[in-house]
Image (cartoon, rainbow, N blue to C red):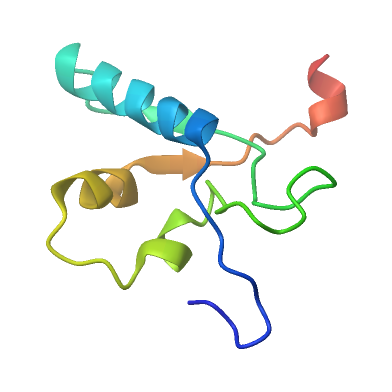
Length: 89
């Protein structure tokens, strides 16, 4: 939930595309055990705390009920990779 001093956050278009792609693979290709790996926690110099955290999506969408698409994203397993970003490249 949004704190009193916190600005409204949005789900960005690229983030929406990533979620939609992952959900499409899960549904269309039948990958039932798919996991969404991301470092995106809604923080960073480019976000200025304006974007929804992909890892903690349910924190920002908890108030939305009876929406099948939101429920699909909530149920999607989202994991932060064990290696830090610098070790991957």
